[in-house]
Image 1 (cartoon, rainbow, N blue to C red):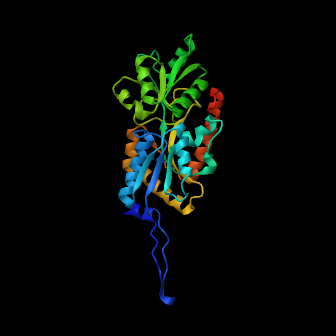
Image 2: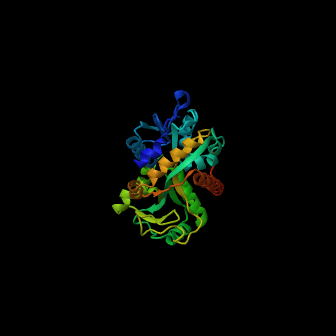
Image 3: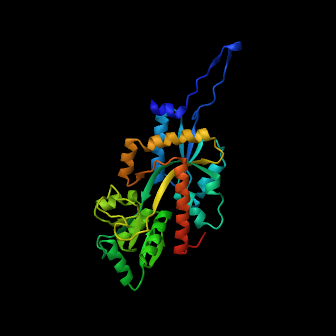
Amino acid sequence: MRFRVAMTLLLAATFVSIGGVHAVPAESYPSRRINFVVPFPAGSATDAVTRRLAESIRSEAGVTVLVENKPGADGNLAALSVLKSDPDGYTVFVTTNSTQAANVNLFNAMPYDPAADFMPVAGIMTIPMLLSVRPDFPAKNIAEFIAVAKSRPKPLSFGSGNTSSRGAAELFRHRAGIDMQHVPYRGMPQALTDVLAGEIDCVFADPASAQGLIQDGRLHVLAVTSAERLASVPDVPTLAQAGLSGAELTAWVGVFVRTGTPSDVVAQLSKVVLSFVKNQDTEAYLQSVGAKPFPAGPDELKAFEEADTRRWAEIVEIAKIEKK
């Protein structure tokens, strides 16, 4: 009931005795279908958490919530589709650091401005990367991994299944003072398959993709890229704890709307999302997939987005990544 009240901002119509006129109540939000646009395909971590959020709103507020998957162009296609909608809070962009922080540093010409065209609403989760190798790889910790990399006549190879995967590896390589050869993949599953087959040496994998392989003992994790250890792999140190500072990088998922959306709608939607993120069931779910709740309001998410954009500018510069 508390959620329903928070969702609808019910405004009671008042009766004006003079003249017997009834005031017309303002439209509450939400009062009709909401479309969540996700820049990744069904089955991705972003898609999965968005569908849980949509179901929560459907069951508590009684409005239809559709999830539209619009993958392509590293998320830019989805961003552009949101910008074609009305700025009324009924088309919502549930997206990641790819569209809001990384792409502006990876593309020569962006079709939109992440900071100017979108308003931050709320954070949902952060996702660290796991430096993962085969169990028989000749290094059991970060110090040994760096020593192996420096001793090899040819650079070690790393695969990347997404933007954050590559960014974490490039930042690690730079901070460690080692050379590694990048091997791009369309998705994390194929990169992990090639690690297990010995086609590449390592990958910075997201926990959800690597979890089953870790539990089966087919994948060994040397470190996590977050500032704190991960509950799903509590014995694995952070890079800083392993002796390599300044290499922290996490992917994140947040909610955005078109600039120009009424401030009261943004505030209400933010309350709704944060209520979902802080729910114990949501926290348990996020922990189970190797993510952490990210209950950031509009101002905090904006500051986080700006800092991450600067972080990606640094990564692109140090890795000498050629812009698209």
